[in-house]
Amino acid sequence: MTDDLLTSSAPPGDLQTAPAGSPLRAIHAGPEASRNALIRVRALPSWIVVVAIWVASRVITTAFLLVFAASEGRTFWAGPKPNYLQVAEFWDSGWYQQIATQGYPSVLPVSASGTVLDNAWAFYPAYPELVRALITVTGVPWEVLAVIVSLGFSLAGALLFHKLMRLSLPTGASLFAVVLLCIAPLSAIQQVAYAESMGAFLLTLALYLVVRRKYLWLLPVIAVMDLTRPIGAAFALFLIAHLIYRLLRQPFAGRSRYAAISSTVFAIAMVGAWPLIAWVSTGSPGAYLASELAWRTHSGVGTSGIPFEAWLSTLVAWQSPVVDTLVTAGLAGVAVLLVFSRSVRRLAVELRLWLGAYALYLAAVFLPQSSTFRLFVPMSPLLGAAAVPRSRLWRVGLVIASLVLQGLWIWFGWFNHGGGTWSPP
Image (cartoon, rainbow, N blue to C red; front, side, top):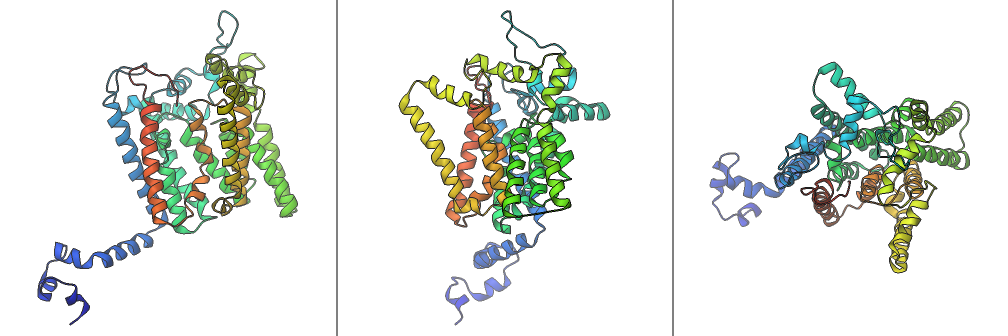
């Protein structure tokens, strides 16, 4: 008697004559069918798998948005129970729409006391200007095109993120990193009228080019990236660190060295491009910085613009030595763990240098508040480190945790709950 017959509760003839797709065949073919399905998936081109992951994740995120929208009351942006396109227009989306339809103000708005008020100069032009150009060509309205552009860059970003991860990680880990990217707690920001998906795509492309040593190709990418999201200073710091590292640890000469130096100098110069444009356009030398700091006047913290002052003044404002100490120690502990983590060390050294440069930039420039979580999006290479462990329990736990946190962020961050809270995402 064969093993099949020993493990079967039905006559062998029933199994042999059962039609394809019947429950009987499925029961007996279970483990083998699963293995065959896995083999077939692995045989697919990686880009198809990435697209499938992205589509599935957008379905999940869209479901979150629509379910929560169904219980949303009247807000500043829409009436009760807004539809998807209305939801995509919440919060800072209005500023991008204003830029796309009206441009930037030629004079900074000021209060009676002379303080600069919230205005469009705090937002970079590449995303709204791209949407404006598409509106001119197609005639499709802002609320539709803005979402389409964000989704397009989100998909392109996922495909490119996989290519970036493959430079450091094996196939399985790089694909799981894409899963984590697509279902990340803040991944909803990739499909609304925000510049985040465009900025993330350009950053991923820039990091990919640095890892591949394509320095001259960096120049146009840096130019557009630095006019999309305020990460130019962080990227310039990263290129300086990368150049020093290569000069000390990986000596290179000739054309490659000159190209690396040129891209670094160009990145440093581009840091001042948008502030210079704002100055020339308004006649105010500090137009951009004053516009950025205008949002901080609401809390009265971090209004000086001095590096690191915003974080320090926020800790002081809490007026709790215990909380201050715990937060400071916690942040330092996380930084140490990341630096010495074996999984993080699996990433290309360029990605680790970027993570360090961007973390330092955040600490120096930004004010800790509800939008800070969104500012962690450029640290997406860390997802590659999280994807390294092959434990099934670890990976399932990460997926569940990401989806739970995504739902919580959408509910508490994106929705205004009938105007009852004000915590910009």
